[in-house]
Length: 109
Picture (cartoon, rainbow, N blue to C red):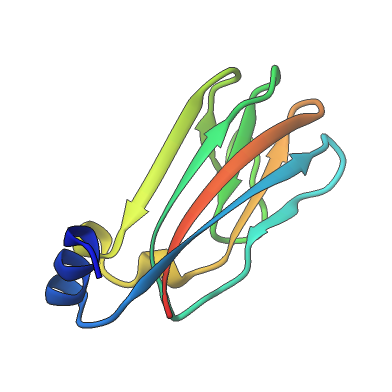
């Protein structure tokens, strides 16, 4: 194993894996960005599209009920060290028009 693997094992007591994916949003219905996962340590969402987007943990993201992700690079992230168990909760998102999110999760394997 390498230095990063040694650090992760010492810090979290297990090996981890990064999961990368694109999620396409629309302006009609919320999309599940990440389902609940009790093995997720952290996640980061980047809005790489040209439209504003919102995310939320309650399944109803929007201007009044979500957290804004600016177009063309807006981002947000959650880590277990900072937020406790919040990273394990599912996340939904909605765009004000079609847009794309780049999602990175760190999970225990």
